Image (tube, rainbow, N blue to C red; front, side, top):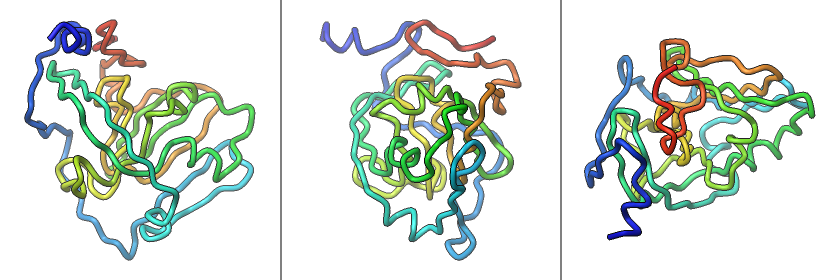
Length: 188
């Protein structure tokens, strides 16, 4: 039990459920028109169809998940494409220091390139051995386990590599720009 207490950030409560929280409605997925785009400060922009994205090298991680609304869930198994694979595909320019994650309905979130390239950051299509549900971000969700879950954006459609940090949706609406659960970076 002592080890579990060290896994739980301050102000968080452990749950075995996987609550559903998001802003706005759940977008409809249309496989024929879905794309995933890599752009901005890259040597070569890339756009993938759903099948093309699913054909990329797959990884699996097991990680805890911490929501800013104070719940945490241990040992989530995520399957998808590692962020490092994404970076390798488009030859990111040295001037890129941040990423802006673009999602359905105009939603965005920002990360430093350092946070984005951690070995446990993944573009997930599956959770705990099953395809993500639409409520949890199907067909694609970014998972950033070391930050609060609003950085683990749902319904991802692209990554823009940028030089200067640009706050995303929640960061522009009062949430902390970084979102570290261990230092309770909840709000700005």
